[in-house]
Structures are given as structure tokens and as C-alpha cells.
Amino acid sequence: MKSEFIPPIGKISQISGKCISLIGNDIDTDRIIPARFLKCVNFDSLGKSVFEDDRKTLKGSHPFDLKENQDSSILIVNSNFGCGSSREHAPQALIRWGIRAIIGESFAEIFYGNCIAIGIPCFTLPKKSILNIQKYSKSKNLFLEIDLKNSSAKSEHLNFNLEIKESSKNMFLSGEWDATSTLLQNSNLIEQKINDLPYTKFNKSNKLFETI
Image 1 (cartoon, rainbow, N blue to C red):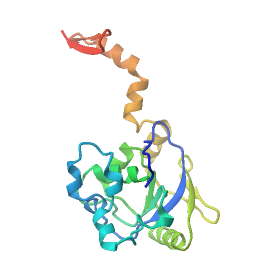
Image 2: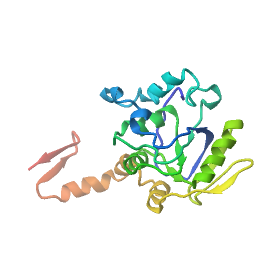
Image 3: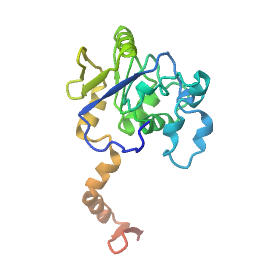
């Protein structure tokens, strides 16, 4: 896990990093971040607790505990990853551990949407390709360079095309996935809209919206 969390912002077109493989189908959100951690006030501490119960069971041999996987940022998974509860804490825990992109056979729909909302692109590949990547990365460190615009990934010895929803790809390339930054960049338009409304006005002295 990286020592300092720096969230992604704005346009995302390139992602590069070391891969970490997590083998298994139907890995649900309760395994990604157990329910007892949902009581947190914010998401800051979730990274250290990702896969907490699985890691305890495997006593140091879980992929997220292995020394060679530390500082990995691209997660390789199998089918129906992120199924179960719709908790947004699951991708929040992953991104705070250091994950910046996920490549898998398939994803649960709500988990996929929660990932997009915080800047984690989720790509798909056929089962055979995923198994080959996992087998390759098990024997040696795999460093991938992902090109979102061309939906491709390459390493020193691998080169393959990724699949991603066109709407999701366009959101990352344009920066529209990042609603907070988009709002801040268009604060003048927001202020103008507020001033145009007949029942509100913007108080510039204290930055408050007042109802008339």
C-alpha cells in the first residue's frame, strides 16, 4: 500500500504500473472490504483494511501482502468481480491501497459504476487472456502501460487490446468522470445560473446562496 493517497483528478488517458493478480470468480464487496469497516467517518483508513479477512486467513500469503506486489497499481481479476453489496467503500479501499486500474473478465454493474465515479477505469478481456496474464505475472513482475484512447495495453513482452465501454472511455478522456473538478472549473457558470433564478441570489461577500 502506498504511504500517501493522492486521488486522480481530471482527464485520464494513460495509466502505467505494476500488476497484481487476484485469482477467483465472484469476489464480492464484503471480501474486498468487510462490513465492519463501513462505520468509518471517511474513506481515508480503508486502504490498509482491504481484503482484511482473506488476508488474515492466508497469514501473509495473500497477493496484497506479498512483498513483490507492493506498489502495484493495476489489478488483474476474473469474472463478476465486485458482486454482492453495492457499498462504495470497496473501490474506495482499493484506490487507497494504490489500485489505479482493474482488468478483468467481467464486473458487477454497481461496482463498475462506483469505480468510474472515483477515477478507476475497469477494462475487460476474454477469460483465456486473463488467465494468461495471471500466469505470466505469477512468474515475474508484469509492468503494463495502458493507453485509454486506443484501449490497449503493452509490456516488454505482451501487447493486447482492452475493452471498455465507450461512454466510460469518453468520460475519462474528457475528465467528465471527475464531477468535483468539473464543478470547480465552471463555478462562473454555476454562479450565473443561480443569479438567473428568480428565487435565489448569490451573496458574494460570504459565498452563500440566499433564498428570496
